Image 1 (cartoon, rainbow, N blue to C red):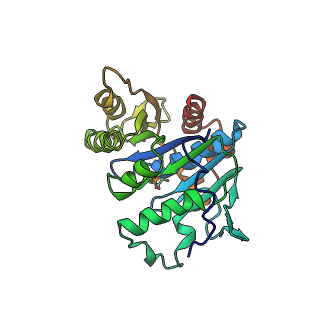
Image 2 (cartoon, protein in one colour):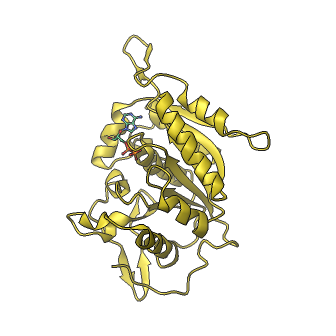
Length: 264
Ligand code: ADP
């Protein structure tokens, strides 16, 4: 159970200098959490003070991706201090459910309260950047973020597949309806480099550019920030909690993720 003081409600309030990026996708399984974890680490490696809030209730995976599965936050007086992994401060829904994980069958109000408490009762200190890993789709959490953090900017993750790009576009539009600015699309799983040097487009092509074009308006261009290839190293790094932006920085996927970090 989350407990803590009520005094720090303005940690990420309107006067906060922290840049907040909500990472969203239409569908699950497109690599949103893997990218969020690696992006956070890449930003920290650039010398920025970074926090990640894992609000992906049903699929929380950030602690595992960063090698701190099972680590609990510490409580000092009424302050909850987030665990730190690879210089990134991390708080996850997964740190507050029992080991069976059954407690994630939460309804909207409970979710809203939990996320609100993450933002108020967890002491992050001064951050340059806060990343939010949102659940896929367009549900309660996106609306909560819209209310709690209207200044959050949105990054949309999609695969190159047209169907994935369609739902990615929809989740971007919902973010815009809740008042947030969509600042870019990241295409993931964009081809597999073959030993002969050619790319095998397992999930097709063009979904990222399509979603970006369709989310763009005359007033607001939404760029495609990167196309990240399929990468065994990226997947394995996630499995063992060793983000490849540190362990294999020359892997093309790591280079592409670092490229996104440089644009934020
Ligand atoms: P989501 O958060 O969108 O549900 P995940 O980050 O959990 O997606 O990724 C889904 C699966 O795909 C994971 O097993 C992850 O390791 C793998 N994965 C993600 N991106 C890539 C990639 N570029 N290359 C290879 N595997 C990837």
